[in-house]
Image 1 (cartoon, helix red, strand yellow):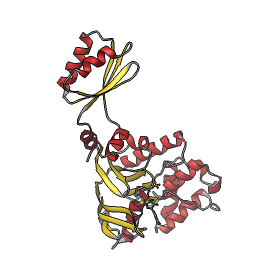
Image 2: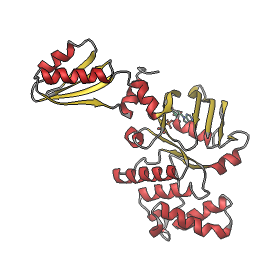
Image 3: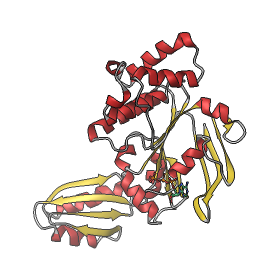
Image 4: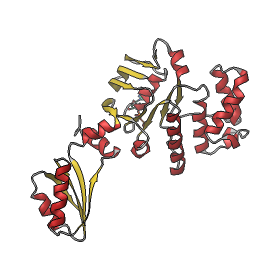
Length: 308
Ligand SMILES: Nc1ncnc2c1ncn2[C@@H]1O[C@H](COP(=O)(O)OP(=O)(O)OP(=O)(O)O)[C@@H](O)[C@H]1O
């Protein structure tokens, strides 16, 4: 649905994005992750037909962003990282303005605006002035305007930035809903927890280079060459730790007051064996957990160059 090939963008001598190639399939929720200044917005603006590349190309919904920008714009709902809302307008007028811009026939506009307001839980604000809305509501309104022309692709640059935790959760729930409706979604963020449980695939970008991209399960498997175990004890973990350290498959033992974490270069049978040994050795074993990696682990390992 979204294909980028060898995208490069410089500002003067500074290379903002270098040779970025990426493919996002239909129906994916792709999390574009990177620290500030990594090149996320630059890439997104290229996809949104707002920026000329030094080299490289991209297609969205089969249309070339350079040769057929009008059809790309029809195919996408784009939410920029810094958005403006027109303060002198009422909520419905704001959406009507975009409906006209997207050439939605007059007799359909009222119903579409009603549907979008309903979806974004803004129906009760229909006749309010935009400048009277809270930040969270303005953000939802901005998301609403990306939906009026029912685009198959949504490109959202940090859609939850500056929102409180509750409003973030609302945005997250909404994104899940939009994905269920069949939209392909690219969402950028530098807040990993925001994306962890909504994305089906991710890409990690740093200093203009895409370090890793793929389905989230494959990315997790790639980084988890070793099992990460979290083991808790009733008291000081010394006895348990020395047993663990004597095991040839155990590596990287990190000790806390009453617990430790270890990496195990083994399979399920090794996990079971280790658990049995600890239980039998009466070292005060309380719990033994096979810890799943999370997006933060992935990000740290990838940006430290531990995974390629
Ligand atoms: N118009 C511009 N002129 C010069 N440099 C720019 C311009 N736009 C972006 N840059 C630089 O390009 C780099 C990438 O910027 P970009 O906005 O794409 O990063 P980002 O990953 O979206 O960051 P953030 O999370 O802070 O929005 C940054 O170092 C930025 O300063």
